[in-house]
Image (cartoon, rainbow, N blue to C red; front, side, top):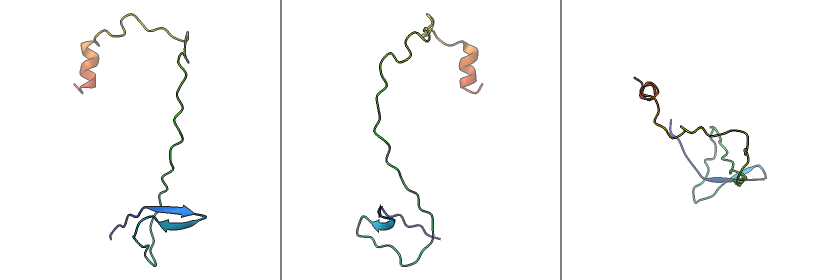
Length: 73
């Protein structure tokens, strides 16, 4: 079995190769459509203001027991 990867466009339900490659006359396979991601919207600053407080020891080193568990020990 061999695989063929082509960059294509779909126009009104028709699959058209984007490059100089030609599609085979007859074939079967799977079609995966890569959907472009929507434009990323920025989250507003202060979205969760007042909903939690950062503890004073937030940047303190983790306990040895917890560090060992991350290392699989």
